[in-house]
Image (cartoon, rainbow over all chains, first blue to last red; front, side, top):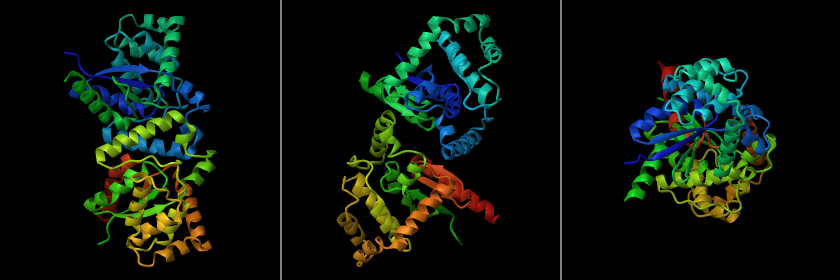
Length: 206
Length: 206
């Protein structure tokens, strides 16, 4: 029988997507919900709202609070946290590789690891060498995914994903989307999103 | 022995301050934390960030999500929810009356009830008659508080409170502030804020 579905929309540069990415696989397994990782370019959404960079940079008080809040969250989860410099990191290559690997069983593990590179180790995820080393953990033909990432088809597919995110009403990351289109924004809504996915799935089958 | 303290900074027009206001007294009692209600003018903080109105109005996707998220939260808490029109309500009078009643034992109950007028009944809280009827629940000399609210001293005190909110790094509401200055933003951080207030208080005394 098919499991309930939940889409995890995120940007590899998004701060609150980091703890969400580290939590979602175990929580989803426990809840028996199938998660689909869907990277998109949050910067393009911000640009459409008139923002040239992250609101955490544009609004200093909001930014200061976010870093403090994120530190508290990571402490509670025993997750290491390094502040990526510059912030936000350019996530384009990492996202394109994820789109190229959309059908691979290791997509989720790749995403989890890219977040660790950025936020646990402070490594530059715009660097092809870093991304290649992550893919090599999961695939013997890592270079193929790096090459695919540079094709017009993959670039266009990521653009389409970002456009779709905007059409769905996504304005920040992480956003969890249930099969019925219900949106849940923020790492702190992950549990609610999983519960929603389960209960709507059960209702549809009864 | 003195209880741990927590400040509850809010604007009567703020949507997420509504569930926070309805939850905080019982949760604080349970946690043995003393809460101080501190209304301020969020619109002035927004203006300083270059926003002419609530970000929920400026950014439609964010606004649509907020109303949906708030409805889910209120459903879970069995709180009625009416969308105030216009949004946000002008909260100036309600806040000035709260400042005038800062030393009254019923300040918290007054604030809880003003939020109910706005968000459970959809009543215009800028209306002096509505605010007076709330004060009359708690004080026999209700008119005195309405009159005080129009004095230069109280107006100035509310301005000073708002300025202080900005200086403390407050950029949204609700914000909970522990005795050591730690900030917690959002209704969903209330439990963490109470736990923080307790643990820092215990650490200071040991």
